[in-house]
Amino acid sequence: MKTIILTGGGTAGHVTPNLALLPSLKEAGYDVHYIGSYNGIERKLIENAGIPYEGISSGKLRRYFDLKNFTDPLRVVKGYFEACKLMKKHKPDVVFSKGGFVAVPVVLAAKRYKVPTIIHESDMTPGLANKLCIPSAKKVCCNFPETLKYLPSDKAVLSGSPIRAELLTGDRLSGLQYTNLSAAKPIILVIGGSLGSVKVNTAIRSILPKLLEKFQVIHICGKGHIDESLIGTAGYVQYEYVDSPLKHLFAAANIIVSRAGANSICEILALRKPNVLIPLSAAASRGDQILNANSFKKQGYSTVLEEEAVADETLYDAITETYENRHAFIETMEKSQLNNAVDTIMQLINQYAGN
Image 1: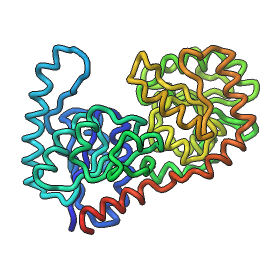
Image 2 (image 1 turned 90 degrees about the vertical axis):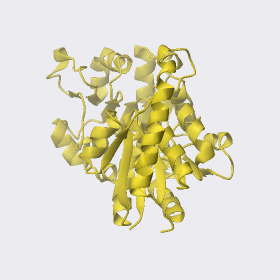
Image 3 (image 1 turned 45 degrees about the vertical axis):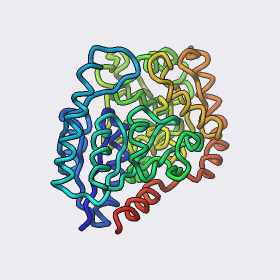
């Protein structure tokens, strides 16, 4: 039996592509282990999936001054030696890394023990953690054609993002039953991100009466962001977070309003859902969501409304115009080549594991 170590953590986006690979890895007979941080979001997600999980020390490497810059490199060094012990213990045939700072010591330890590593970069431009890992990797998979120019040509693979197969099995009727909404009016699914987005939530609720004249709205607003005053509003339902029924809500939706995290938009593309993307402002991030969104706009998959431009009129117009042009968006998405990332990545894993 071949052994694979998966790694990656820090946000749900560093973990869900790993989860998407699990059914294929199990089917191919791999013994799967996961290395993450001691208490990161990845621990709960991976343990819930029934995969053996081992934590290592992890620190963030920053491009800006912070007092933690003096202590975090020591955590990375400690994590490296812990990862080396785990390499000796499990003797993996291959490592697959989804990035995040916990992955750096794991990839470096794999190199020391001559274990081939495959990396996946979700965003348009590689983050610092993946930049540090690329020299030690055999192949670097990515989501966007524009990313290829930032990667070594002999390592770059345009794979798309691994999508959880269950997301594609949603049932529209089940979604309508779960939400108690009607099949008679089109449905907007609003997703603010796993932590919720105050800006998106506020903007949608500001135009809700006008939206409800033409649409129904399913609003996933994030933990602590339910608006009590809107409970019971006809045609509007809100949830802090949705787990397994999410596939049915996707199936019920005619149009999606979302942030532009790489994994989220790749899922929207795979589901062929017309969408309005509101990328996280560059003031609150390194600007990767803006690049992601603009790539999808350029390819004809999305309407993009930058956060600074969000107002009642602009958001309403973006939603209604996207819905009116929905068939053109779907037709363009149908032509996308990024349909089978799981198969592409599994071929690479099998190749380097000697399977």
